[in-house]
Image 1 (cartoon, one colour):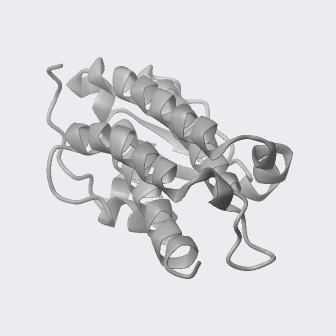
Image 2 (tube, rainbow, N blue to C red; image 1 turned 135 degrees about the vertical axis):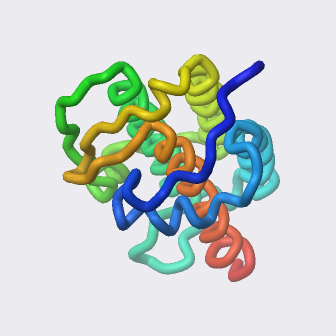
Length: 177
């Protein structure tokens, strides 16, 4: 589907705590990167196997299922922010507290496969939103968690957030187990 090409956003278009997410996105078409993640990340999760879903590398850390539940929640929240800002909504949006969302998400009772499928569906919806935004909408900004962020930057933050958690899964959950 044709779309506007997006350049990597400058630092004034996202919160300082999101810089690592933006930096972790490889060079290239952000829409292709998001699309690739939409199939590759669920495939990676499926490869872990259902029996590993409740694995924690330390007692006080999230299980794999909880981490994927967090990734899914964050995809929803970040895409919602992008939608609000793209539509010109200037209402400042509150932050969301991941450490309160995860325990109430009941991710441990789900299958890893269902969480992977949910991610694929969410990413398809995120892409559908972004594919239909014009250059003006992509340039719009709003405030979330007390920081100004552009719709363009949110695409990079979304991709970078997934890359961040995939890296953590590889380093602390797969390689250590």
